[in-house]
Length: 239
Image: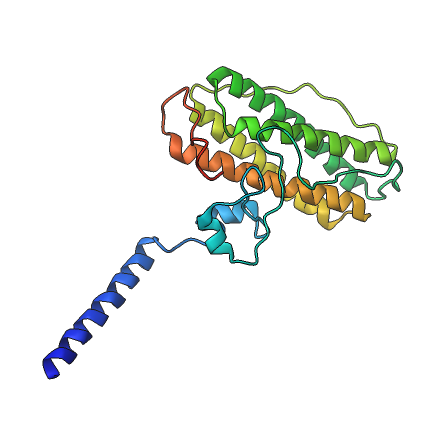
């Protein structure tokens, strides 16, 4: 009996030491957001909820989020929407905060730049995902923000954008990550300071998709390496 107790003690100690080693090496150093490193979570913010293209979710993510999590419908491969309704009233009160209007103009400019940048890079490298899912959503963002300006009776400025050049597809993904990451704090600020619920709802939807775009380009970049002309993760992967 004493020998058996010693054996059990040794086995329990081994399990504890193994668990501590895994924690130390970072194997379990992931949060609930699909196994996302904390640095990435800091970039996209704590409100991000990972989704798949058709409003579905990886089994791994579903296990992490719990049975009560309900994934939202997103624009999928065929460019169709699920249950999104981003209609904007014909008239909204003009925002009193000039800084708010200025920042809304800035995100509109950046969305236009992003769409042009992604189209150029997709054509250049003959890449598929995530561009074919992100580009239509960028157009939606442009349309929705433009509708807000129309409702405010404000004419937005138009600009000519300079597209960044890359030599490898992974560099193009990094450019995309930077664009999406720069939009996240701007949308967060706009939502916090919005003066009506319609504007807030539209911008919240755009922010959710922007966070997801950042994750998609991050995953594509992380799985690609330095081989030009490869589109990254396959269709069966969880975006």
